[in-house]
Image (cartoon, rainbow, N blue to C red):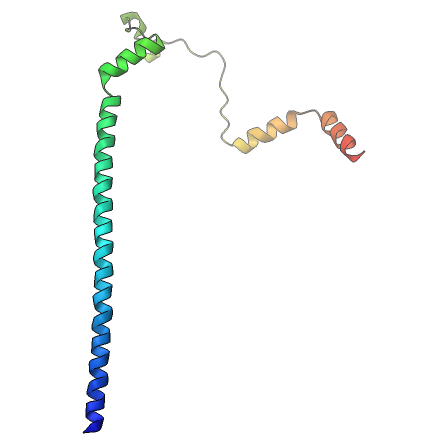
Length: 125
């Protein structure tokens, strides 16, 4: 009988301790949830403000005024609009290097060896 009471007391103590831990975990999770919800609301508000600013900055009338004021842009003339095939062909072929390392090595090899040798001799002295 005493043994069963002792087990019941220990079981009640463990259950109480478990409930105590669960309660504080729930409180911590609720606090975290409130912080995340507030963070989401702040982010949504920031996005709303940024969208409004972007709409203002991309306003065509505003951009037109800025282009005229700072870039000296003028309206296109019909003679400026051509079909791409009507443009003159380029006289020299443009070499496009597919490998930037190869282009760098070509530039290094183009340097005169005497210049490189004299620098080495100067550092050795």
